[in-house]
Image 1 (cartoon, rainbow, N blue to C red):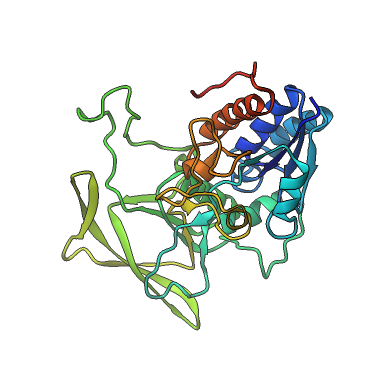
Image 2: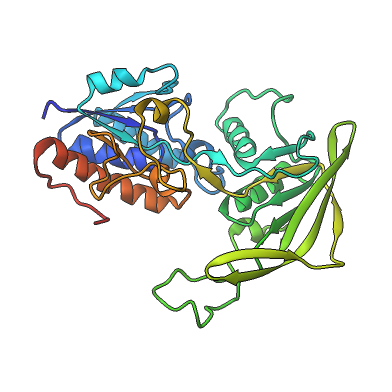
Length: 340
């Protein structure tokens, strides 16, 4: 077609869109700020959960289809946004939701407390043959590990800690334990809110629910102890609140604490600031029904506009945004769309 499209971000959404747009006959360039293509698939998901040979097989296919990849290309930092506006007919923002939710409590500054993605990224780099110096690598070997957050990312940390040889692993969740079967107020076709066990949980570790961490303490600047208490949850008018249960305070020894409490949205500085795109009340990139942002010719898909979610949603949104971009450039599109 002679049309050129820039895809910013090489995670599941960006790659899904790139393949569809390329097959529609457009020239596609994918910009990735890391040194390898893959985004969350490459650095966020452990090898035991997604073998990177599967990802590399698909990337080889995309490269053979003549999709162009630019690594170490941080748009808005070392690649000017104006360059993309000038050289491409459309831009897709697919950079994910990468701002981690922090835990602002006493002792947070102690060594040994890290965000989950810091931990998982370094492990993935070593698994892929990168030289990661011991002084910067985060290892659970021989340590008492506590994971704060009960979601998939927390489970990934759990499985990784087992493989590194952790002495013990505890995973804390603020919410109460879900029921084993659907509650009456959670009928089909709603998402089933039930107790789930991942392969990482089957390997071991302790899972505890209704726990709120209140502070950390340590020695010589290194965390040694986590302080917490049990909570009761109330749900009034759709708003959750948590009340401490008196007399349930406890301490737990910890050498390594991993914060896996989700993500707040996309990074604002650089790309989004320079483009001056509109954001939602939650801080995600706003889009219309045609996947276009507030800036004409600039589209978005995946976690960058949805917020933290599942890979399957990112793939579906990338393919749907590809159809919208194709229609924007050509007036119509024969590409399929998983989402209306």
